[in-house]
Length: 249
Image (cartoon, rainbow, N blue to C red; front, side, top):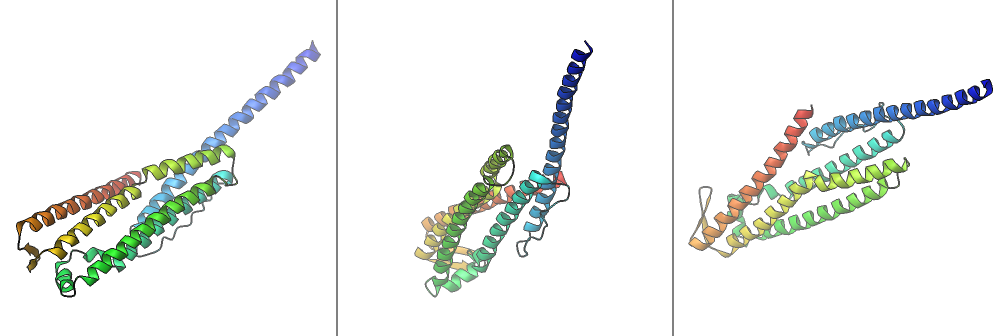
């Protein structure tokens, strides 16, 4: 009996020891997950805040002493990707600014450009189309490369799968994509506005386009209203982003 009891006792200790080890591992895992999420939220907020000033590069150290092992690798990877995406977006905005895209509908500029057959405006639209196409292509390529690199990170297989799934979900719900889609619509409307201005008679009356005929006036007003609405949708998304950030601060 003592021998049997000893064997049972050892077996019981072994089982409970393993269960305790498993419990400890799970608790440690939960603690790391919480730290991982906290670091991501805090650093993402910093990235978002710095990215608002797209005239300056983002300067944030992605590494955090609270993390170690696989979770540190993942956090560094995700945050570096966030910064890369934000910098790419800001570079795109800087290049649009350099093309004077924000002055596209400036009536003084257009009146002056009309005297030279709208050469400047046509060149502007051509360059903006090239820039947006390039940005869209680079964004898609960067997302594919990021997903591919995530699949080959030196971390546990289950974490690699979770990270890849998370990246896909983030990509599908990323509001930067929504902003860019709206910007593409504005570009399309700008093309149509330019056709109206180029092919119809108008004159400047203070800061207003005065058309000689009703049809182009209606076309212009309708297109302009659509652009205003699209800009309002962009601002709505930006405000939602700011509100979400403020609620977490």
